[in-house]
Length: 63
View 1 (cartoon, helix red, strand yellow):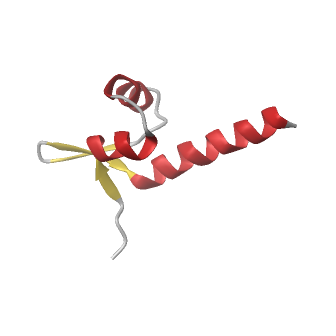
View 2 (view 1 turned 90 degrees about the horizontal axis):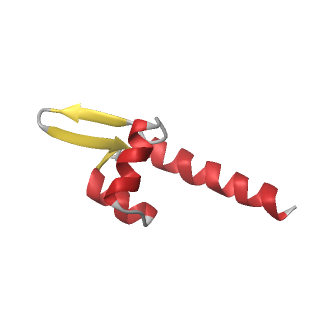
View 3 (view 1 turned 135 degrees about the vertical axis):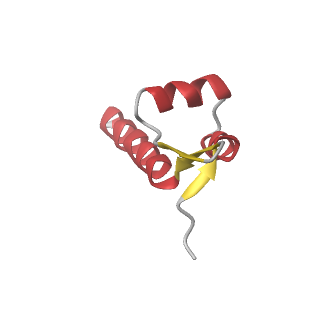
């Protein structure tokens, strides 16, 4: 089964960023959150999109 959501802590580790940056990205709409009960989870698709966006930016700067 494919995983669609991950914890905020796991998202931080995957991206190599801190807590403050993670919450700023959530507020900016770059990372999509989902509330299930008392848990706040991050959509893995938004993590992948953020990484892809960063790679595109890096590629454009290199040209």
